[in-house]
Image (cartoon, rainbow over all chains, first blue to last red; front, side):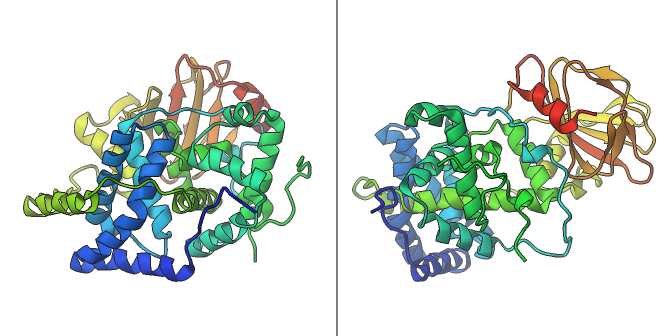
Length: 198
Length: 220
């Protein structure tokens, strides 16, 4: 059994959270806000604690994030992201404002950022909902040891070398495992360039 | 059709960005590139979806008693003193065409200090993103020459609109040029459209391993 993932919420609940956002935006609906608050505030608090905030700071930041959710509810678009992802972004940005601890990781030789773009179909809109669905469907299937590396990278924001130290793994293994897992999340069945190293 | 594998390549920059650990200058560079390139946009969307999932499945930590009620009080206080500040577009009309969030940063810099002339047809403007790195927007007119220069450290230049060419080749929207301390070059604006480019420069700080990247990826 996988103990990293506690509970994922059902598509119905996710839909409901999106409805709550819409009601806050259109009607300033307080009941909807309370519903989102009860679910997300304790999770945002948990996130802030994990990232090193004190209990007091974490509580304040969670309050602050939720008030921002109220203020910016009109900017939420369910075609762009789930409520969880959107609130994560708000929380992340709030944390960056509060504690500026940012870094620049080393760039790999095959850094995609430096590559020329692949042939694009300019008209094809990016289906973010589909991307998020694939990511979610694959995340719950990932083996525990890949999931915890993703958590360290995408949630706690550790660099690959920090992850290698934390999990006592060779750097190359960390890199290939994360690359492999991310490939799966993007709907790739085969690891690119072989060398899965699992 | 599925995206081809190359488009979904993972980068450590993507997870650092999603988690909020990337230097703000690099974050802006990456956000701008994502507005210009669908492959980068998709990779960032997937990365943030991972982070969002982690938040959703995080072990909740109970808020203190009455926290929800206090949040509603804060909201009431906020609503009564409603101060909506509308940002009006007084800045350069050209800048209004830049992709967000670069546009906001550029308009802010335009209001603060404006463009600085650098050479005939070349203007530049420092942006304030709260980074220790230097980040500048360049405006290069068609056929205008950026004075030949070398770099103290490493320079990353993302073409936002139009294009420029130098000894190593041509760069168009979404392309990123990287120059190391030993490179000198003289970019020239491509004919046609005005070129806008975003440059992130690292004066003394070292990018480990970046010279290898330059040689292998861009080495010509």
